[in-house]
Amino acid sequence: MFLGREPMDPNSQEFNDLQAYVASLTPNVYAKMKQFEKERAALMKKISGPANPCAPKAGNPCAPKQ
Image 1 (cartoon, helix red, strand yellow):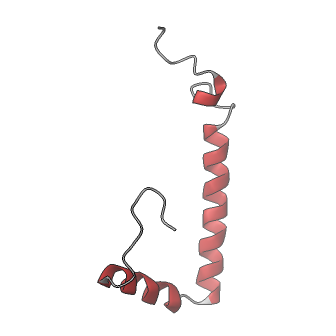
Image 2: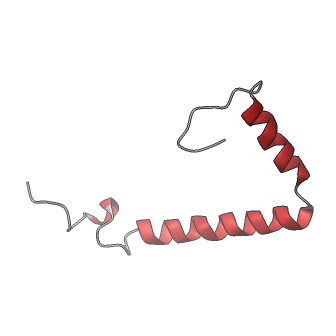
């Protein structure tokens, strides 16, 4: 699944290229990609959570007053 875009047509060249790329990954490269994604997700959670005073979940004190 790709976030932020329409589902891919499984008959498209783009889909076939992506499928070939993923299939070509060695276990070592794949493990590094998974670790990178895990660290990226943790960072995004950290900067978008209540620790960020401008995050919407924190009441966003930076928002214009209504």
